[in-house]
Image (tube, rainbow, N blue to C red; front, side):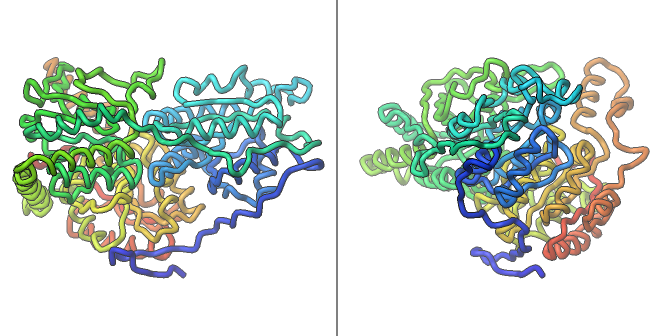
Length: 614
């Protein structure tokens, strides 16, 4: 039976017993054991309790060791695709800041998982990916299959978008390579690594005791501190600016960074724009100016806090001609505090366009933000009248924040919109909010074109793991977020795009199989509409027929039956629903089933365009 309880905030929570075995007492592999037992010992030493995988013969030795030597710890989560296995680890890392193991079968499994590994790299998610190859000993290879599933230097397939890869040649090399990989993975900016273990090396008998790292050995280097003199200059710039803006992207990767940014904003009384790669700042905070673009014309200083995406929020894109114009006034200054060029790849262009920075500081924002707050407090204490001046600015920000929030919520209650069918984004976001607002809720990824961020009360760091990524990523990462919160009694909500789920319908089975109670509300516009819009733009630019823009884009005729699909996978489900009066009752029934431990899906049909103009 599920047991109800109350969270610290007083909101409803619920939990379901977790079928994860307890971590066994540590033992040391020695003579008479197998080489793959050493890998399991390292997994135990480094405390990674979950391993998502799609099974394969190349790591049958490791699989046996995980079950029979390691006591199924890490707990093996069977997945229907390697891409999903990596995405679950990605979502778990987003929600916790901690790594998870994903295991992929030799070369073909690695190639299946490539897309998910790339997105984890782009999103700075620490994932400990384990693979296998060979046997490299030709005399031990099975005819054909072991040859076509093996590559020379298998790690090269993902080397351009992993932080580190290694393939130990001997069992004695396993512990050091593992420790190095973990350290690289968890050193900021974090990212995925790939460890490849030879199939025959795993299966060979262990004839001696292998030296493991000392339990007292430091696993990850200390955080990088910024240059103090440079930070003093930034503090002076921040205090001198008339309308400074704190632009945050990955500073919210930890709750520590989230809380530090709140203190800085409260000290300086300045605008904060959260880019939502992680939950960096409370949506309910009066200085949160996210999605309020009119503020940019007033900004005279932008301080980026672990920010990589500078150009998109500060420029206005004319999509048809691929031209950009700045939202900022001339003379605006730019300061970058973060990891700068440390993440740049020689292959991926994710580093984006170079800005004309007035100052760049390398340093971890977990250290830099509190340092900047302290320096600003010192200047305020020494400068008569400055505190009241800053507070006056804060009052103006709070008034604008309150007005915009009221406008957004009014849109969700607009009588004209509420009569529309299918549902508008604002109305659907409002209906979900009315049902979940007294729960201890978590949003996994996509925010319904940001309408959930506008209308819901994002009042805690755990509320959001970060914005959605590319198509074919959301359902997998959402399962990882659900796993991260499963033992905390929280209601995990995934506003799930239809096109994304069509890539990986098998992910629904994974949730039912591994006891991941979560609520999926379909964002079902029956189209790959992002690309449809691009075809509309091309038609407008070229004076061709806009009515043909849907060709190759629509997901209908037949309409996918997501509710039926979910039921077939062991979920509770309802829908399709396209009338506002039917949404809340269906959601309440679905949440009741989630409380009982069953994942639930409600298929809601939405407008293809946003029907409300800001």
